[in-house]
Image (spheres, rainbow, N blue to C red):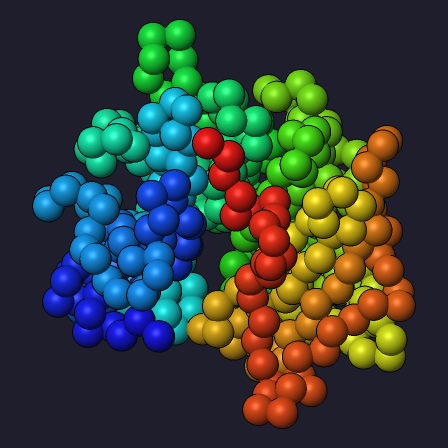
Length: 353
């Protein structure tokens, strides 16, 4: 247990999110804000043996405006962090007005891994609003990776330029659907999680609102190619309150997903891939305030974990109809399961040095 008061007094931070182990033996955790609820993208260091709070990783006054995820690449002396938004704005749900008011981020921050100094801020613009999960390629020599940007359903590739600085370009865009019976006239996919297979061949991401998981061949890094897709619930199921008026991808409204007799509430969210690349696991809970807003049934029934069988040769996704973990049946439930981790290391936590 790391007490909030320790984060506050020792680091001036709150709302911890992503953790990574460091080569030094310490644990580094990104934070999303400061104790009053404003945005603040700083980093906490913990002792790897005692879990005591050591202090800040970043220098005083150099925290980013917002925080969320991060990934470091020691061979290239770089760390890149992302932004969600101010905790006081997002905690009770999503209000589109807060985006215009500047309570959500749209930038990547590039840091010197050795000196802990912030080197660059890459503004991704409107298409890059709410950049969440960031992944370098697993090859430790690689100087590129991808970040999923939730609000406009885009994936950006970031890379080191010939000049030695960093840049980003949009490489995937999921079109919004025109709808009625929803909070806005257009519904984005809301990309909430991405991961890269250990062989750096496939990119996966989840569209939490549209309800699908996509698999892209990224052999050509600048031109990802869609090779697999599967629908698992979401907000536009055929018997739901939302009607799709116009869908540029012409998917139609899919039927509810029922596995082992249980109807899946919510949409696909956090992902984890087996080390051999053949089994993709997914949970459905994003954040309780947003779960309650977009999928109230999940609050009553709990989240689930599902398994997708992956064709890791040619590409392709298929639901395993015999696998379901129902967190609604937990003794103290219903529970909202979020992150997935392999005890021996996995596709979203391992960093090779």
